[in-house]
Image 1 (cartoon, rainbow, N blue to C red):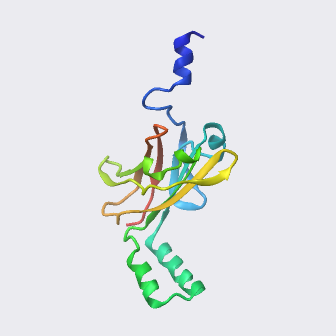
Image 2 (cartoon, one colour):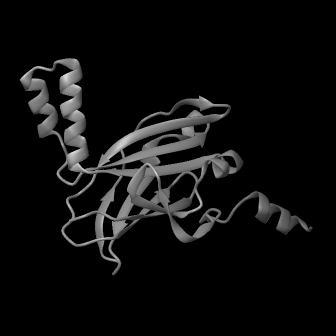
Image 3 (cartoon, rainbow, N blue to C red):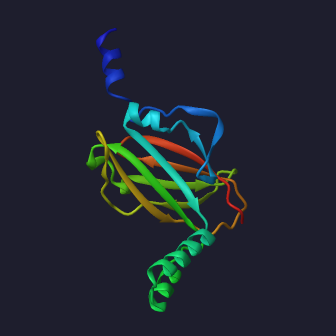
Length: 178
């Protein structure tokens, strides 16, 4: 192997190493509205140190969670009303990322973009800055709920998560009822 081949293997192209793709979209057992298009499993996280998972939570699910929290914690009506008023009308995307090193788990390095089948962009967001917590061995985890827009056009949507630090793209298919 010559020097250029070694350096090309060691230092990826500016676009970053491409993620492997599934032949068919893989349904997430914990989140039926999301199907993974890029190979992004725990085994991949062990090899590359990168794992990104997204789950869609509908407004009804978020409302039920707040109802249960009110029951458990005996919230005052003002606390309950404040939480209900803060609910995003289109639900939320629960974003989970595992990375090597605490400095790499900042969710603000990700950009989320949802497009229709026709390629029309319906949603773009950058999560708020944050830090990860130790997850085991050399992995750190960051988790954040990102508000999603209320769908105006029928799905499914192609959700693309672009990681600026890793220079990689993770793709998911969102199937949300209008």
